[in-house]
Image (cartoon, rainbow, N blue to C red; front, side, top):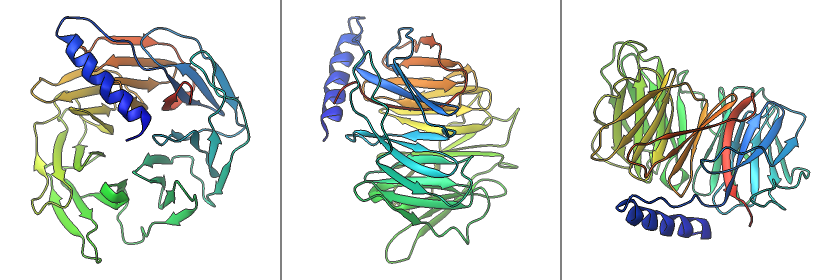
Length: 328
């Protein structure tokens, strides 16, 4: 385990014990990196309103951000290239020093609508029909064969950084899980009239898939265990959320963002659904969730039984978020 994970686990145990007495523990000292237009803007983590503490003006649109646990660099996806920037010189009240990229990987394609996903030791770059994996310890673009995949296929890094495919079908989704040697597990699931929105994420070895047909229908939710001989199992519908756009795993559940609402699903508790469209979200090791929209950041203390919303202001162009320790 990395130092950050050990601290997060210890703090979670302390907070869980404190929750029984109605007290709260402060967040870890983290900084938030927010992609906003051509810049990365830095804010202190936590529920308190706070001004930016630094800004990198990069001269190219920031499409997405990612930081691997234990790494002292921030990956920035731009329309033309994937770059990694060292995170150095930061404190809780000061963002990292603006320095040149230490890694630049030209994409050779327009990635204005792309996305990044972190695995165990790799980064996945999704750029329309082009998809690559990048080894974090020796960065290079390794193409993923997407030629036979239907339009709208989701690509995820599963356990062992295997590239998993979730493909929309007329009424649900088709799951393709690679099993060596070249003998993938494949399952079909779903019972919708039409699939208009699809999102998926991993929680350790469990895959969550949310899919919807648009309002007024509630979205469906499925769970599957990596390598299982059983097909994906349908869970309770995501009532009040019709078009899932993204999915984030929590220590005891899931956070789902939709076109007009977000939903928090926790074990042995009722779902919490609230209005609001958010472009991105980050969940930190100390059990805080940060939901991002242009000019607006909503922070949830996931150990608060009421899930009270703490609203903060951010850059009006904010569209992507990541986090890292305030000092290494």
